Image (cartoon, rainbow, N blue to C red; front, side):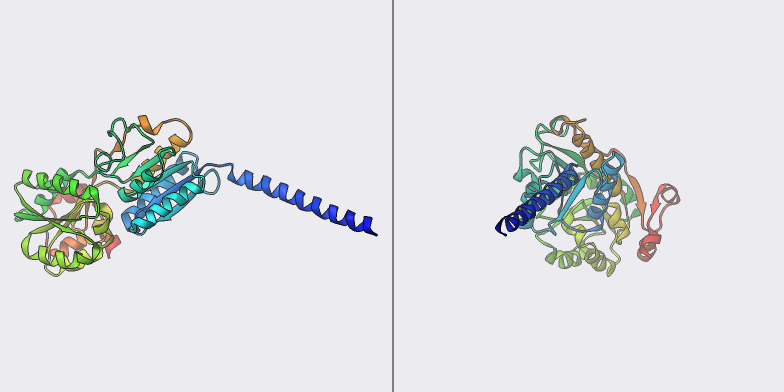
Amino acid sequence: MKSKRLMIVIGGILLFLAGSFFTEKKEEKVEDIPTVGVLQFVSHPALDEIYRGIQEGLKDEGYEDGKTVKIVFQNGQADQSKLTTMSQQLIQKNSDLLIGIATPAAQALANSTEDLPIVLGAITDPVSAGLVESNEKPGRNITGVSDKSPVASQFELAVSLLPKAKKVGILYSSAEENSKYQAAEAEKAAQAVGLTSKSYVVPSSNEIAQTVQVMADEVDFIYIPTDNTIANAMQTVVSEADKTKTPIIPSVDTMVTEGGLATVGINQFELGVQTGKMAADILSGKSDPATTPIYTFTTGDIIINEAQAEKLGVTIPQNILEQAKKTDDETD
């Protein structure tokens, strides 16, 4: 009787071990694909489009989520402490490569590892952000795509659309390191086209509405660099600016859709696609972050919001209309 019970126990153990073996084999098979950890700074249309493009860029190069690559996505929602924690979590999930969307996210990843390759998505100036040694030779475990806007072209467009404008207000957040650099670039571009400028700096989104109210009384139009804090509160900016019919020239195409007048901008989806393709090249061993130059777009599209122009009483010159992409259908 005891022998029979012993045989049953042994049989049960063997079945358990066999089941565990096959389960482990199955898990090994599932995990036998690379893992890409993606950390996004905050949710707003521009960064969301970049993430969508990243997935497409990876897929174009043979890395499809759930099939040939595992993408682990985290969103810090503009909380620096969350970014730090999420960076560590992505590393603990055995990521083979990390992607940071926007400067604060990329910096959090860079502070968490010097070994795993990191690809930057939408970092205006990686050098001043302390992420690379130079754009030509990054020198570390980091490379990626810059979202540096064609600022000079944006101001040339602004004066073409607003020929009576004399003063521009530059709105940006002090919480983002790249914004100060971009504001300085905007001041030079404004001067080059004969405008005077004044910068309006907000420490957080809580001060944006009041700041825009002040700006509307002091400037002829508002310029917004690629600033995630302001982009995340674009509806507030537009709402306040519309009260005095103050035009907004943003740096990003999606912000035109949200109520900006116009811009010369980089397509955010295409920016994401390029980021995904750079990540794929690193995963496949075709490139090394330390020697892969930062990718910078040299051209941009003219994007016009015709509905907003009509609301503000702005006449778009025919030559600009003919070459511009229009967002009116999206904003109706």
